[in-house]
Image (cartoon, rainbow, N blue to C red; front, side):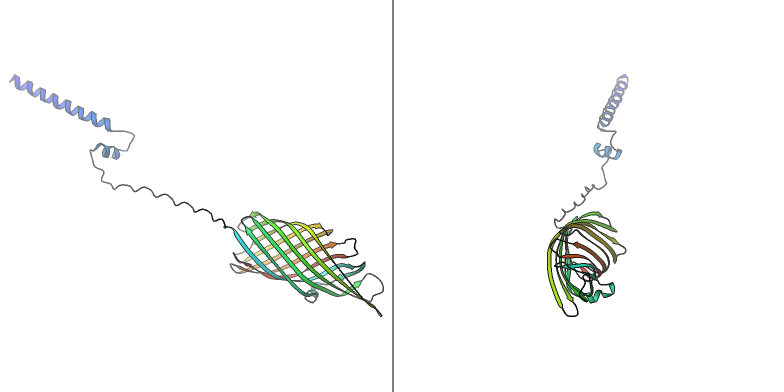
Length: 291
């Protein structure tokens, strides 16, 4: 009987020790910094029945910016119905010229005009070209003798510039511009008296350096207003212009435009040729954005 009791005690102690060792081994495997479900899955006590998590798909990388992004080109043919007033002189013969706004269509004999611009990001290269013939049969002579004077002016202007976008907002854009304005002016004075008729012709070419700006304000998806101007000198004593343009977008790439343009040039060299003239009037045209 004593032997049976001793055997029972030995079996109980052995079972206790085995249970203690198993519990301690399991405790060593548990990391309390990990979630319980992960602990159990790693310990083998329970199986993780949840499906394996799919690695998160990385967000697609943006494609490299096209080197041509921001590149654009536009052409803008227009017609300037210009009147003029000021002083014209040929071989030291001077005449006062004045053509009112009501005479604009009459005074423009013919003309060829247009503008173009290439843009890349914040930079632009606008070019303006004007060729026109103006005349005024009501010019009054300064000198005594002639009873009537007719002035004919042929003007060619080429103005290439460089533009930089200073403000690029959704509603307002502002560019600064700098460039040159080349002018060729040929003037004919016809002086008529009761018994004589004399005609004088003289021309001049010069270059002025100009700087200015341009503001474009979008009033609605279809309507925009542009205000531009520049000023400078070089061959002329003073050369400046101002323009206000109202544009209506009939298509994304076509804008119809109506404007008022004012240009003043004071050219008085020592050769006896004088062109101190203001040219102003209504301008109509369209801008075609080709890209």
